Length: 381
Ligand code: P1T
Image (cartoon, rainbow, N blue to C red; front, top):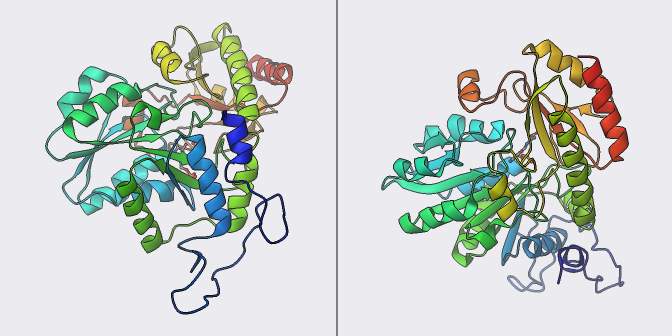
């Protein structure tokens, strides 16, 4: 079964009592039991809820996984995965990653004795040097947020298997329509479902998928013990969003590619970060592991004043100035003061994230209108 059919049919079955075609929002905290311990598989909604189960079934199918778990946010997923580790364990992470992930790792889990190494994982020759007997996990974000670096998942997995290290891939920027890390050997895939999966900027949620039965059990245990679950209404919204993911992603990619190619040829633009550009340094790896190149484009202007960047953002009227990404409407963001402000400036600059970087989450509007907006905003710089 192909992706679009799966997103519409798997996990979406008419409900037994009435035949309702859409899975109901089971707004209940608990379930009647016939006798103590005798129930229909649902005891309490922190552990299981039918609306959540339906969504998890769809999500697992979209990442070719046996198991999926949904959480209250992308950060709640990351928090739960880190609880697989013990004091003294070490994690090797991408040095360009979502600022909130950096904050969780360095400001929360570092206090519990877990050590994080941030390196450019796209430079494969650096990877093996960082491994020691305490290394337990690779945290791979690809494409990276916000610089759109591409990390070779298969090559990381090869090294990870050699040293018995878990590979976790944050697949938020690609979406399962463009990239399936489990097929490339990763152990766990993570999404901020807030983004492309939900797709309409109206819900905050996270999810993970895996093919390991034991890991799934451990993660479900942690989820139930710690409790960061999404509510049934949010599950309904994400399940609805998923049904058009395959259509939305095509237009996101088309628009982003048109904008990236326009920016590359503009006299006021210094550098464009988009893995679909043939001169992008990881373009060949992107071509190998992704079906298309995604809806995110970052760039810098030749003028190195943040004021110029702000002027662009102010005048790009169809791009709302806001955090987040992956919704149908285009957004523009300034990572240094917004999504990545929690990373110390020195570390940001070391990773290549300049104060003047502009990040676009390109929506699914008509291409011509978006190009016109970009042209106008650049004329004001
Ligand atoms: O916002 P939340 O659903 O908790 O997801 C966190 C998260 C995890 N991973 C990646 C790659 C992300 O981009 C995010 C959230 N990012 C933004 C809010 C942003 O604007 O970049």
